Amino acid sequence: MPSSNWWRTAAIYEIYVRSFADGNGDGEGDLIGLRERLPYLKDLGVDAIWLTPFYRSPMVDGGYDVADYRDVDPMFGTLDDFDAMLAAAHALDIRVIVDIVPNHTSSRHAWFTEALAAGPGSLERDRYIFRPSSEEPPNDWESVFGGRAWTRTADGEWYLHLFDPGQPDLNWDNADVRAEFESVLRFWLDRGVDGFRVDVAHGMVKQAGLPSVGHPQQIGLLGRKPLPYFDQDGVHEVYRAWRKILDSYPGDRMAVAEAWASTPLRLARYVAPDELHQAFNFDFLAAPWSAPELRSTIDSCVEAADSVGAPTTWVLSNHDKPRHVTRFGSAAVARAAALLMLALPGSVYLYQGEELGLPEVLDLPADARQDPVWHRSGGTDPGRDGCRVPLPWDASLPAYGFSATGRSWLPQPDWAGLAVSAQQGVPSSFLELYRTALHLRRTFSGPLTWHSAPADVLDFSRAGVRCVVNLSAAAVPVPAGEVVLGSVEPADGQLPPNAAVWLRA
Image (cartoon, rainbow, N blue to C red; front, side, top):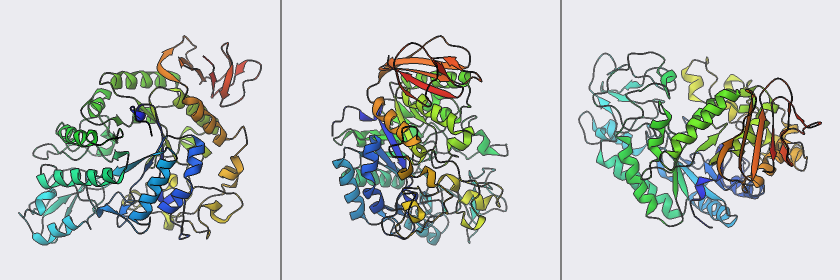
């Protein structure tokens, strides 16, 4: 496959492996099922896939609690299955990015088992963040999943877990930790993966002395205010070391950060020329459906990325956020938002099923939910299971073709009309909109130029396309030019509200 910084303009498709396709009939998505569906992704027009964790794990947090970073969990198959999937993807010119989870391990990782057995003050405990026995936790830090971020061991010491107690935080001041993850990177690079998505890339390094925050509901400060356990300057030393490893391999390997920072400029530090290649643009995901807000977000994110020579990334949905059809409250808005995103310069990350227009599943029964957010909140926060429901492939089959046996680890709603089989070849469908847009997108190039437009309209050009998005309550005239794609068909030269159109520039 040609390299030449492919990731700068790529369309990358996130696969939540457990919910994509089941190849062995047990109701759980796996690597065999994924391999069988690769031709669908080739036809869709994506350049790469990103796989959520498939490593050995007790699945306390959907695999983000890793017990062995060098093996495949039996739920998903074997290392041979991974190698076969990777080879099949590469044969179709689809690159493969895998998740790496460096902030924490599973509490069942061999290191943590050894740390508990070794006792206070041991070298084994120094790989994690333990603090001496006391009646109260060492500070007021809160878990992202709710409750305090400290759990007491049988011998009275406390250990830090910024997520679930089953995910103890590693001590990145420890040389063993740094060496281990450099070895893990090489293990997967040697197998041929094209890159890594770095989970909680803003984590890992904690402020010296572990000072209290002095503020409740700390998750609400993420991405807005400094926190002593996130986005610390020391993390950049780690990524400079990782970049040297990535650059030592042929084929243009890359890494993308899942990073939250208090300003776009702080986020841009993660993609300095000697650090990671990309960082997710969560400001765009979080922006409301408002022309001024979106334009301001687009401009600030492009400017921050340009300042360090990095491409901007765009994302509307992922496995941690409610699906954007539901978030926007309208399929029409979701279609227009997709055309806006796919016309922007940089790379895009799509979440499996968004090309089908899948909504968030809001009515999952309590006994089906598995997200630790649901359990740790006492059922007051629905968690993230609603965006992780298995995909509908064939309207005529049990479990909509997700599994040959009709089994599905989360119950699916009535998605017959949204199944791949129901949308293929239907010009007005979500699937055909995405497919057409992704193939056209490859002909676009260069930066964007804004055109003067009414306050509630976005209008910009790049080489190959002019994109007009109407966010107002009334129809607006479509500028002169050949319409090549629209979220709806313009009528009498007018673009309806909550619609987008691409014109030949």
